[in-house]
Length: 520
Figure (cartoon, rainbow, N blue to C red):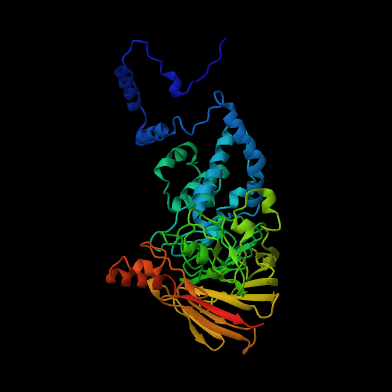
């Protein structure tokens, strides 16, 4: 009686005799490879190249180096998983729409590997629904509503194929399989994981039958509401922010976005180029800051925004005073622990209420209310924002968003601002303004009616246009694709023709903002 064991292919080939020539071994190996199925041959050279790079650096062999594995696995279960599982309980991802491809995918790698090692599913089951945020953010033109450090490019629609493949195959989720199949674009160095783990039997399913409104609970307090899933969809994002992690997260508590037949109320700025990348003047003084979002400012002219712990080599002691939300941590330091995350310093708000209905799948209303007082310094005594999005079921006016604020400053002299950013220049008509989207074949329109404060206690002004696209109370922080941190520096290095092109590109990207000031 004997026990039959099947050896892996790399153990089945006998070691050569001491005197055997290497070329003989390689010839036999090549012959064996010729016997592989046609599909496998397609990946042979690719996988061989990947394995060559992985051997030996980056490998972890328990029987030879148990201390390496033990150190990492203890740290992961003790320090890493509790934080991740807390974040995933909110069915979302805090680092924005670009970094999910890298950072969330890495979590999914560890999920797969440890499950295959016998540890089971190590993450909160809510992890399955993180990528649903991107299903809801997807616009009819293929773009997604941006969040965090990202750079929406109209002609290059974003793909989340790698995390979608990993998550859909592990959780057997047909909606995520659809996200993978809409643009299966896994990078070459990750194709081995497609071979190892993709569930080829999983059938993709479009999100058309999902509820039109999605709420992400603590630590987010985010809501996305749609009127439909087709090309006529209105999409509204409403955001509170309960905790701030830092890094690629923005100071955008209480902000909103609107899309209808084109981007109407937008997140301004972009994450690109030497003047827009991490720690650049544009990124630090505008893009990440409250002033670049459709949120609230309370301007104390004497406020200082210390930022010494933010970013890389180009650190500065202070950032611009945008009148916005504070920089958590020691001079804007990224959160380093679960205890720190739950501390007062990194707590920025609280979702007070939410709901949608009466039909849970196709709601007529979607409601979100939050307290964002803690997002600001003591210049703010109280800041609360409520959203109501209405699906009006009308072709002429398909949707409406009502935004109600209560803001009390510690000093009545601190001016308060309500912000709305647009790509095209708005038209002001008394106590209302209109934004028409006409570029790139878009035909959407947003009409804003000021209800409070009453006429005479509000000032509506446009801030933008050439030289003021990214205006922060006296200084423009441009983002130019061709490099340079300021417009003056850039103009000194390029031709007149190129300068005209860049000016036009900036104008196309963003007019600026409507800035509604309140005196009390």
